[in-house]
Image 1 (cartoon, rainbow, N blue to C red):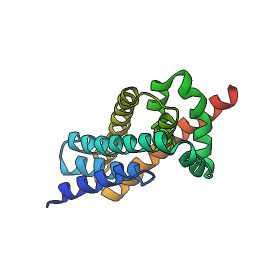
Image 2: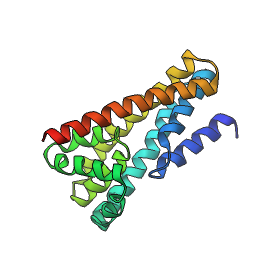
Image 3: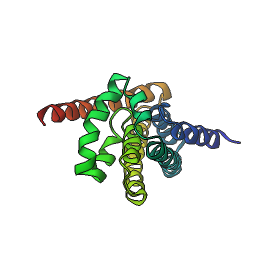
Image 4: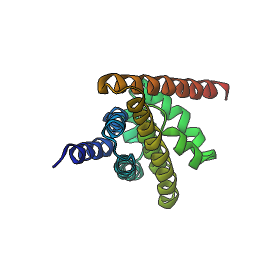
Length: 183
């Protein structure tokens, strides 16, 4: 097994398990793709497949476990804030909210659990989830790739990409919190 295949396997496992550092792993694979001269397509496809499978499992857990799983998760301050923001909006604008939720800390996890507990139709959830994970994994992989193209030192390019991701994530989170207070 070569390094690229091993990296893709690790990426799949990390993206499959909720609350593991998918973003950091995906950024690293984007940097590796840029510096190895390989295509981002397999990186995005593998991460999307893992996140999509994870979302479907979380949806089923939410559907059959109800809000008990959400109540346990809401003990964490950031996740509780995400639940508060998502809960009301999912009923008014479900598909766009699930897509946007991918950019919030643990938003994909919380959104999938909420959609299941709210008994969304599976086909609607799958479609929104597929769009959301594809856009989010592409965004993160491209950030890593851009960092790997700008700076050839892998560690520094990873730090640059991670810094940009943290700043953008903070801006998005701030905007969501601000809009939640306005309502």
